[in-house]
Image 1 (cartoon, rainbow, N blue to C red):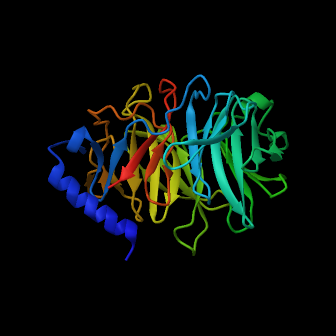
Image 2 (cartoon, rainbow, N blue to C red):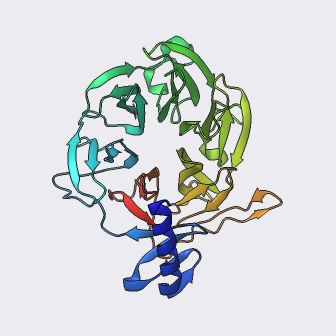
Image 3 (spheres, rainbow, N blue to C red):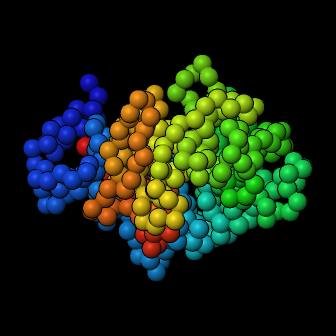
Length: 349
């Protein structure tokens, strides 16, 4: 039997016994432990995880986080004293690097022939940079003048990237710029450009994140954020629109895949001007929201998700920006514009 499944089942039963109060998906158990989430996806908030000496290792916006094959947790922040902070699972700082990424925003981990690389999207530098895990730059993708869509570098503000697992092509979304999707080969040659800002099915309003959905081996599909449309959109690799995953009321960031589930950080809800209203959404293999830690319980009526809102009396979240899922199914939540706070760890129960 799977150790982690048995452990979660035990903790789930223990939580049901010890929880003294439950409010809108939040439980207060022994020693005022905070449990958030719904159904089979509930998490204990580990207060103080990863908090460092702000004089030595400050953060500004904690944008994104990934786990490498050694189990290290790699955090990207736009604080140039240490753009990359590397933790172990206990929250101990292992190392840092980087001081030249003032617009550090997107962080993608790619396994290429057994070697792992990072792709950093910098909105200030209008660049995507491929590095090794120690920060050595391997490849630079500058603003795509050759596309004919951009008149000057400042129009291009890439927010996320993803690497096609079948051929190594690099896909970049320009979420804070003109909202195009750009495809490059492994050497950085631009191959295709599609999308753009607008309300058509194949257009975006803030295409903030992108992944290759590998849950179905028979398909090779992209999932791309359209944050102001409160949805993720599905495409083939040539830009053919395939459908939407609607999340009403949720201004969601990038999709993150772990097993058969999708995870997304909602940085604000109900309105994009509604500060400190974020939460996390967890979707099943059918792309249905099954848990919303920090938010209202997901309810579907005639197959349509009701608009969700923040329900977080414990004030766990401010502006969640990403979800990192480790191999033990714990979550780490970096936050944007959240008073320079370090990521929040949620332990699966």
